[in-house]
Image (cartoon, rainbow, N blue to C red; front, top):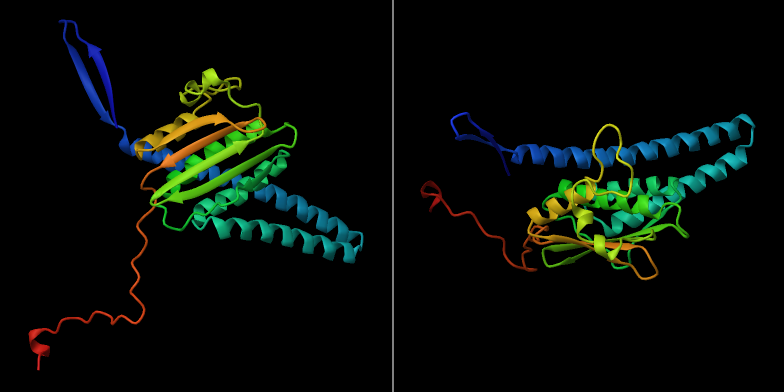
Amino acid sequence: MLLANRMPTDDGGAVVTLRDRTELEHLGRELDSTTGLIDALRAQDHEHANRLHTLLGLLELEMHEDAMEFVTEVVGVHRTTAEQVTEKVQDPLLAALLVGKTTVAAERGVSLRLAPGTLLPDRVVDPRGLVTVVGNLVDNATDAAAGSDGARIEVGLRTEGRTVVLEVRDSGPGVPQDQHASIFTEGWSTKDVPAHGKRGLGLALVRRLAERQGGSVTVSGADGGGAVFTVVLPEALAEPAAESPAGAPHPTRPATTGEQR
């Protein structure tokens, strides 16, 4: 990606400078995906601290049986959530993000779940890029769904050959029809602009990442209210490793001149 800057000169001409922003864009993507993972881990740390304080209180009150039941319940719930995610989302980075985002959403009263039929193999070509896309869409959905009746988010991932199709549904107010295109422009947001800078960069970044891979992102209304964001990423998966047919002999290394008999 090139950034062009044109400055007129006194003699009626102009000086044009070109700067390569490819590396800057790449670093920005990595920073964004890392920030998403850090936010998810921070929420988990906060949740674990609350649980430890509860456990400490039970022990200090010598309520040992209640403490044992509490620990068993907490460990069981966390293990179940992690197992459900990793069974369907086999990329470790993305699975970790979704487990963390589930905690973040729960703290805001929003239920996050995987859609039926979700399955993503561990062959993602650009895991950090997909983490950025999913993280931004889930954050956007959490903001929209928080406070709604039966607040919920549903994340679906499926593959069509090497293409990955991502759908994020929320129970929020939805997006007006006349804003379906403008929602992906930089600076668009339903929130007030903070004093430190712009807002509304997440969806614009999602569109840039999708289009860079020859894909697309669209928004539509969900049945029963809310919004559905759909991202299509062609060639987002590597080709599956070729497997040797059962019983087929392994190829032998050709003998060199000194090895020939």
